[in-house]
Amino acid sequence: MKKNCLVAGAGGFIGSHLVKHLKQEGFWVRGVDLKYPEFSSSAADEFVIGDLRDPIVCRKVVSSDLNEIYQLAADMGGAGFVFTGENDADIMHNSALINLNMLEACLKNNVKKIFYSSSACMYPEYNQRDTDNPNCSEQSAYPANPDSEYGWEKLFSERLYLAFSRNYKIDVRIARFHNIFGPEGTWCGGREKAPAAICRKVAEAKNGDIIQIWGDGLQTRSFLYIDECIEGIRRLMESGFPGPVNIGSEEMIAINKLAEMVIGISGKRLKIENIPGPQGVRGRNSDNKLIFEKLGWKPKEPLSLGMKKTYKWVEEQVGKTTAR
Image (cartoon, rainbow, N blue to C red):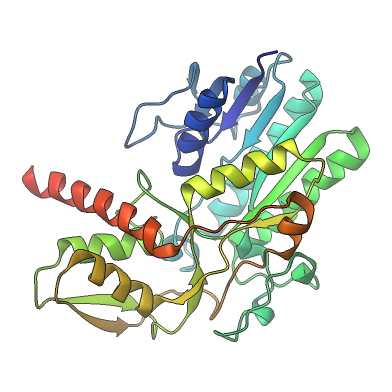
């Protein structure tokens, strides 16, 4: 039987890729967002432009004929958006309101299965001070101490979904994403994440130029290519495991090394200058023991392969902008 699903946040990077994948699987898909996808046409059967902070919009798009909901809608961005402190109130208010509205709409329309996209930003800052040995295992989440209000909201919403699961028998799945990247993601404007930002800087530079990297460049992260993220979402949704579980790569890299990788991909001769700027925790890396135990799967694509595909796409966008 053909399944009907809703992707909330379908105009965003991960949401738009998820819609394409679900369509390929044979789902009927309704998408909802404040905007259409910026860099592609939506593959959704039906796309609703709407603000999920409004409970009326939520009740409109969450209909009783839906088998599944994928809730990816959130107020988010990269370090330049999340870690300055200037957007904290909006981040917490907007994202929490969306999740409260979505769960209420599920209850009213008897939709029993929902995926929620949490974030590795909810892990405690005190476990992420060592660039070489961060601890991001799922059980390390408490005592809680995220390094941003974005992380605190994600932690609250995880508990919200689990509470609704216990009290109202909604079948939830929760994944903690670790820095998802790839083509068709935000690459300029202040909300872009490190892989896209570095690709843009390198693509815009000429031989002999200097590109600037926030912090000392020794801070470490892992980055997961979009296709593997989508596979992880679907495997989790089809499993009997509610989570929370990490969906991320275990290939950790220092940010300066990531910049050097992109410079190498470009074939240019560039220098790196480290400057003060928001950078988040000192080290973060996905711990994939639990996802392998529960799903028999974990991401395996090398970072360099995803970065080659991403750099090529960002370079094309920079070229289009320059040509205008």
